[in-house]
Length: 318
Image 1 (cartoon, rainbow, N blue to C red):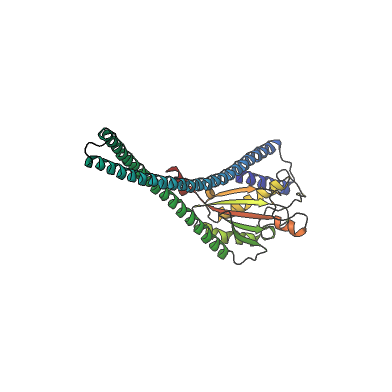
Image 2: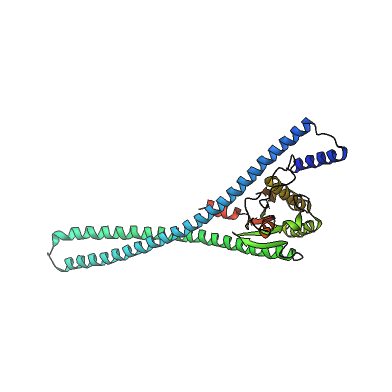
């Protein structure tokens, strides 16, 4: 995508300054670049969906671990009751055995059977003890995994809260009408209004917007374990001046997201952490039937999410 925009800008500048017509070869090359960029966009959107799906799977697996621990607890209590019952049964059998010994000649034929039952009871007792020991071990292991998961999730929540505080402090020079920082779904959302970054239908970032992004970059430079998703959004009013490379709101939202990504990368943010995407008019936050609603829908959201590598390692060890 960056190389494609570079070609586009160069060709556009050349066309504007010289009035020359773009050759078919240049047009084909640019068209190929656009097809490649569309594929990259689709791949990025699939990656985002996969991460969200994996996060949901992690949440389900955590709940399943808790449910399994509850079931094991019930099994443990049931086995303990069986163990107590077996102990009582053993005591009763021993009493019968002693009675047989004190009553000479009484129930001699039953004595052998009682002894057999005593042996069986003792074996059952030993087996129950082994099962209880195994259940205790499994419960302890489950408890360790749950504790590890809870610690990782708690650390992740603290990391998100600290990240929000740092981002908010870095952007104190801008009012709420220009940007907003909040936590949603365990991620930090930095929502930047169009008026802070772009003129209408433009993909060139204003000086004030560049200043805001550079201040945000000072925080992101230290966040090596955070993924950065940049989403461009528009209202439902279609682009008035179309071109070969910007035909609709999809194109506008993607190009704006890419422009922001380039500013952050130029400020030193690791490009491997960044994903640029556009959603056009299809993810509004307000009703597009009003002027204020349209204004709020014309935004760019920078979504900061801690990586989940440690959670995956714990679950793989299960």
